[in-house]
Amino acid sequence: MELAKKSGKLHPVEFAVLDEWYKWWEAHVDINLDLLIYLQTKPETAFARMKSRARAAEDLCPYDYLLDLHEAYEEWLIRNPVTTTKKTHVIVLDANQTKDDVAAECFHKLNEYLQTLTPKKIGESTATSPASAEFCTQT
Image (cartoon, rainbow, N blue to C red; front, side):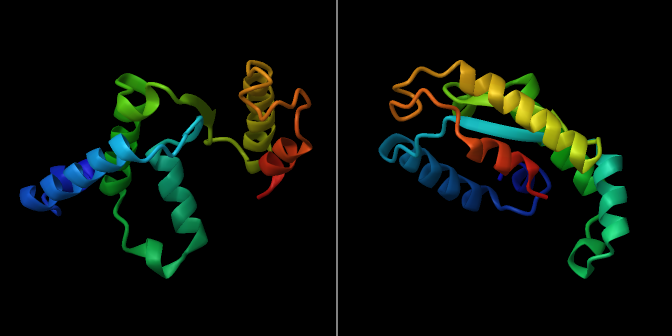
């Protein structure tokens, strides 16, 4: 939403309405977000991958958009985490690697994170779910 506002694709009045709606949801609906996984990817890498996939829908995406999007996520999750990330743990994965390397890093960091949880936080269970390993190895 911020990116659309900055680029002029979202009128200030539209932004204000969406922002108020978001604030209402945030105040009245607990989505119980515990974890964000950020697949941190350089814009050059994302652009090269899009070009190699050669999907028609991605063909219209300019490099500058990926650069702006990258900067917006870096600002939100890395340099100045606010609101959403205050109570939410963020795992940052280097997604410039191969899929296998990203999956291995995901598995490792998720296991580290799961070890920090109390039984109450993980549904009164002390066992680490094999589903976490399955999640990270799906491509």
